[in-house]
Length: 316
Ligand code: PEP
Ligand code: MG
Image (cartoon, rainbow, N blue to C red):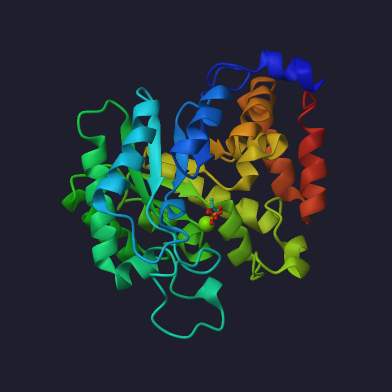
């Protein structure tokens, strides 16, 4: 079954009735581009730039950053490339960018955009390198901030991007407060990208790094699906994109549910692309919507998964 799925699965992401859901890749740097292209990625939905900064005692130089970004932008001449600014802290600690104080709960500490505001020169240098990298290239550069909680942070980030000459700023929706008030954040930015890994962690108040709590880290959790719907709705009303770039996007059944909840693009690790593309192509948007409704009507993550799968008969 997997073989036949893989053969039927090429071309741009769309439901059976032709509703487009661009399928993008999550990458950590230029070395992941080949696998993304080989699996038919239409662009990059999450470029995790921290990998460029890991395992070193000083930040990468401006030229080194520019070269790494340019190489990725070059590989997708017709696509979107969504670059996430440095997501340091918590599960991604960086030696040269420590949080300003002791943190008993790093996941609730100075991380992502919060840490960028403590070290604005690092953010400014990164945005400048991104703007230079995109100069003269046809790829559509979009830049988003991780770990955004409220309007004032979104406004700060959008202004920082525009000051650097980047005209498509976005924010990740990873904090329940941001999802609940997506209607307020949406006016500040051009797009949302939901990080379901962190959104699940924070919705369930269960540290994603604690193995004993892995059972809580399930994006089928109906509360998480509700938060996705609350984010996608205001984005659609404002005519702005709302992608998902957490692990959830790579689960074929959940990908259909996310499309049914109003998500407009899905970004995942490259090997997941073919099965997700096939699952979408076998179901209409209406079927995806019914699966989403069934999942949200369930009372547990397990029941949501079962209920959705029953509404998606053509899954492998
Ligand atoms: C997420 O939180 O869902 C996400 C995509 O970002 P990361 O896993 O890098 O925190
Ligand atoms: Mg995250």
